[in-house]
Image 1 (cartoon, rainbow, N blue to C red):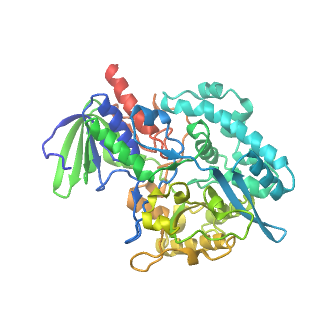
Image 2: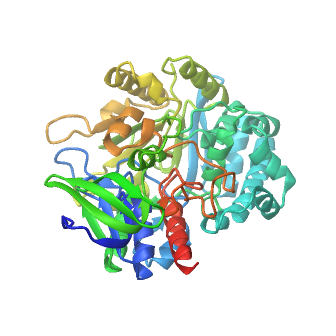
Image 3: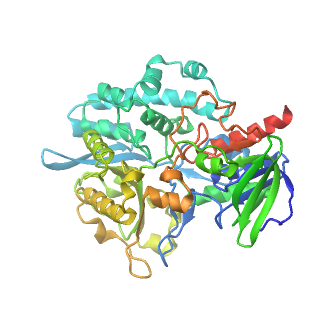
Length: 522
């Protein structure tokens, strides 16, 4: 819809119609507030959308964000969302070659199968026992920390007491994660599988003294109090469509094709200038919630921007006519690809890839992980494709920081894509290219996106999927009561760059709405 050119005052104007903005809009509108959402694109959803990227092919892929872990069931329940998740029965499969023969590590399918897989790979059960102890510890932390994400920020000491486990606190919050990985595990491949959760979209070494790898790991193991990563039925767009519907049903006005260009505020009232194809308009508001990056917030308000952010991932979407066979014939491809399929992610391989990328060169053996959405949720495929056995593959490449693409984005993207798929092919019984579907124009159904592509397409600063480095989930100087506050009393940051932001969670959106409602009661 188009917002009237005249100035109208809303209780809240939300800049950005991504999932967090929609969460905030739904909460505020359900509380009886007048809400306007301004979205630059012609659709809502931001990075959490389902699209048909291949011409003439009836397959709706979760193009950018693709799995759900951090979304609290509390938000789904409170907003009455018509949205479902399915659990993956297989957690991961990591192919390897040992003593000249193909093998691998399958995690999932029951305790017995996982224990046997560890023994088959490593020759004993000691690594499996270490795995159990380590993830029992992270599970306890998850059950303690996850419920705090939708409450006012605890202090560091309050969260430490909530965790109530000094060994766990030291391991996850104080020492580089590499220390724990090397102390607890002996096998290089097992070490790598553990470390990967610390490197999703985060360019860091296992021993980085900043502990940004620890923060990334923490958010990847606490979701839902279990750390499970689930598949959204109907694709990620099903969630954002449900959120948009909830917001509209409660009375929020959602205006797509409206780009916010400036926010003026005196701390009590504000005006948001927005631009459309037909010209500029102004919306007045008591509160402004910015569902965008901290850099964009600074641009809108005229404040000094924070340090530049940098993303570090290669995202590849594919459609296959069939799943490829594996060199490791002990594993069914339908199981191997149903969880997270780790490629070139041994501990030494991850370190080598990081060192090469830190030196300014693309990794020679790029690490990546793959999963097949359609094995768990075939509804994303048209009936004809599903009947013919087509499958989707989503690949997420690690240690590919934006700086590598600056000299020639297209050339480096293609170079990395080629070498990444070569690493996958080394574990397949047939080339992946032989399994790729083609679109209506005869082109392979494959698209790759670098951090620079994500910056251009979605406004992610430096292509960083978290908008900036992830934060600890506790209060620090200047973070405010909810972690969404800015230096302007009535302007809040409700995007991934807020404290406890990142991932598809809705947490910053809900927390910003709670901050607005609390202010009204004060």
